[in-house]
Image (cartoon, rainbow, N blue to C red; front, side, top):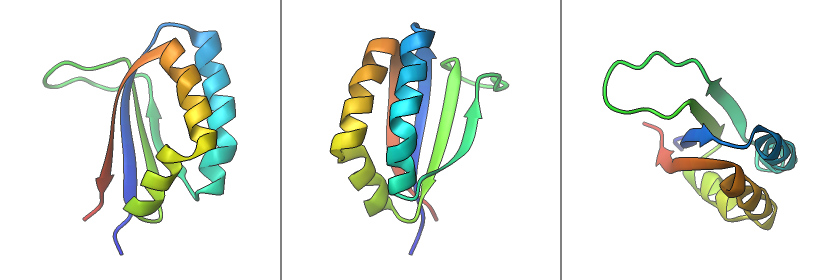
Length: 95
């Protein structure tokens, strides 16, 4: 079975609230077996437009990534993140 990934491109406009989001989401990530593979605020842009922070999180499979995103715990963290940042986020299945 292929791994699942959440990829997010984020522009943080409230660092304090975004820190709160990170704290809130950490335990939920662990609960669903999520592993942050990329969390880079200094990516090297080569094409297109880019937000200031890129995050890639790996899950055992795409269904687990979906369950994580739709969970109550992440929903509460997501509400805080939405107050702190503008985000483009996708769930994808690995090859």
